[in-house]
Image 1 (cartoon, rainbow, N blue to C red):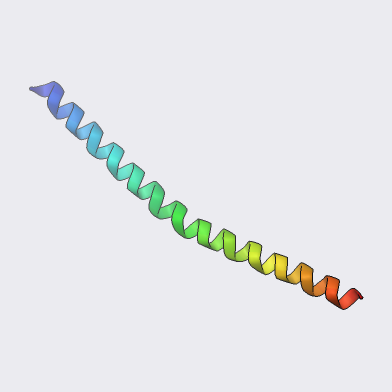
Image 2 (cartoon, rainbow, N blue to C red):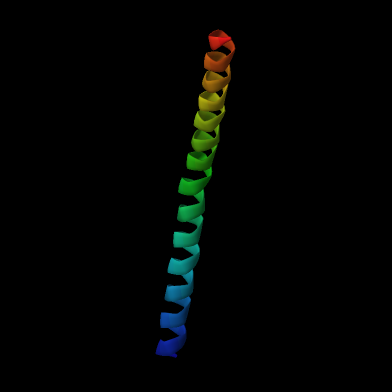
Length: 51
């Protein structure tokens, strides 16, 4: 009986940590992609200005 309770608690903690990790990672990936787009546009603008 007590083992089942421990398993349920660990399972719940695992689910919560996985959701939390996803929620943190998802916005960060959007920010990273946006920064990469801005950097690549800046490089294009610099190359265009040099010619």
